[in-house]
Amino acid sequence: MKESDWWLAASKRDYLMAQELFLKEFFEGTVFHSQQSAEKALKALIVKNHHFSRTHSCMQLFNILEEIGFLIPNELKTAARKLDLHYIPSRYPNGVGGSPEDFYDKKIAEESIQYSKNINNFVKNQFEETV
Image 1: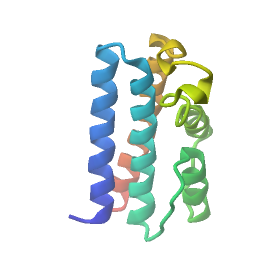
Image 2: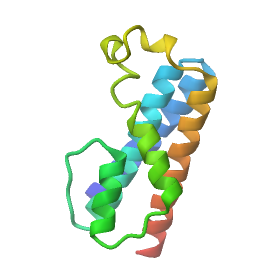
Image 3: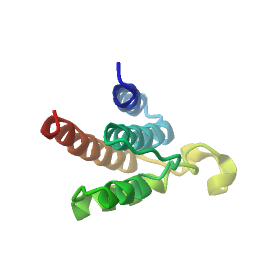
């Protein structure tokens, strides 16, 4: 198994965790794992193209992909920005000024899952084009 496959497998698991947490109404966990899924999918594409990054920002990962020649649709950049906003606040009470569960709801969680799905689909399509 290649390293890019490791990242993709981890991305898929985070996406599944986001879906399961959503069903149980753990919305703060849903948004965190949605962000993680998108981040890991983007890292898979970067690694597949012989690059590396330590950032956890989906937006920064898109910037790296643009630097190496990928065309990133604006709506995916917006999705990345919105997911990145949840990386810390969804996990830490001092990130939002209270318990994260009080700051996340079904709508935010649904949007996060959709953003993650859109980014994952983009990555999947890029992998299929470079096979």
